[in-house]
Image (cartoon, rainbow over all chains, first blue to last red):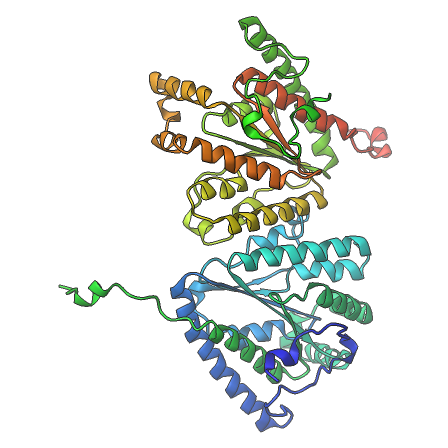
Amino acid sequence: MSIADQFRVVPNFKLNEADANRKVLGASTGVRADDKQSDKLKTAELAENISKLQDVFAANHAPKLLVILQGMDTAGKDGTVKSVFGQLHPLAARTVAFKAPSVAERDHDFLWRIHKEVPGKGEIVIFNRSHYEDVLISKVHGWIDQAECERRFAQIRDFERMLIETGTIVLKFFLHISKDEQKQRLEERLADQDKHWKFDMQDLAERVHWEAYQQAYENALLATDTPLAPWYVIPADSKTQRNLAIATLVFEKLESLKLKFPPGNLEYGKLVVE
Amino acid sequence: MSIADQFRVVPNFKLNEADANRKVLGASTGVRADDKQSDKLKTAELAENISKLQDVFAANHAPKLLVILQGMDTAGKDGTVKSVFGQLHPLAARTVAFKAPSVAERDHDFLWRIHKEVPGKGEIVIFNRSHYEDVLISKVHGWIDQAECERRFAQIRDFERMLIETGTIVLKFFLHISKDEQKQRLEERLADQDKHWKFDMQDLAERVHWEAYQQAYENALLATDTPLAPWYVIPADSKTQRNLAIATLVFEKLESLKLKFPPGNLEYGKLVVE
């Protein structure tokens, strides 16, 4: 089974049956210290190769890549950006973190601020949170009802289909952690003063809604997984396994494009630079 | 027959059967000088009333109004903006003219630059040209084939439906002039040095494709007229009749919302300003 198939959302997918601690096929267990080390080395190598493929990707100036990272607080979205995409050339790559919307953003449709940030030709853009928040936090807190949520699912499917039809590759990762793992990570943040900046009282308030979030995520994943805009549910209790899984999927997707540097001007080879 | 029904695109609509010189129901003929004067007075009054309704519209801070103006060169898009929307308060109204796309715009999907400019709550935005150029000039010049054109029609329908579902009223006007009228207007621009700035050599080049444009417009109107995003084909050989028709339609739409100023805080009436 390919790594892509291993993590794809399937019909009748149940989030509470997905093991947040499941191992990446063929990878180390990620439990022993030397296993983690092995995961890290493999991920670093993949990140380097992703960066090399980016050169060709940018030079072709045709396809666009949009990577969407979603997950509960502490699921590791920031860490994934650093480990998997940290080697990308900033000229043709951007990470966009979507926080609570501004007044101007709330005055527009929820896709307004999202559409502005999608990649152009040859660009790789990583969304740290995204338009999916508008069917997650909004649904959990009852700011929208089920009918509005379904309308948004359809709007998201249409929007992503349009992006794909206009040359964008869309990869969506749900970083799946267990409730116990989140507890541990929040406690770590509270215990270490140097990690306090990452802590937000809101994280504890949201944790109370854990089950509602899991249900909202399951609904969203099922409603918006399409053949061309697939969702991957990445077991994320192990940080090194999570990074390795995502790095592998991104690398395999880029490699599958079989891009080459565009043919040069044959005359160029004959030019003399005085 | 209401003025809205009079100009709505109907199934099996044929553009070459639409009279560019047809009169607005119940309006003057627009032919005699004093008729033109009467049209202008009525339009000015409507523009003033539209401006008054805008106050309530902006105060409600809920609905959004998007007006799309399309038409061949010299059809009168600029003149319509001035006559019908010239009285709007600039704080809550904008006109956006879409010219040839920039490099960054061409690197993105054709709706990217459009979505950025849609109205927020309480705002009135007028598009002078729009995303429809991407199924008109692009189709006429063969930059896209029929299959891509159909894909864009669907993307436009989805996009406009999303705007409507998120609180936007969408009014689309095709300013319909005859080929003879365009000839006359171009000649006027060439004869008057003060109008040379409005003339573009490209206008003559595009005029050669008149029939292809008419066909592309007919296809676009039929493919993207929906109950909530209707197209109105406005006879535009007479400038005063054109303005009167559009002013009437916009005024009637705003009035039909039956908006009132939001209820004030009852305590405010008791406050004393020292």
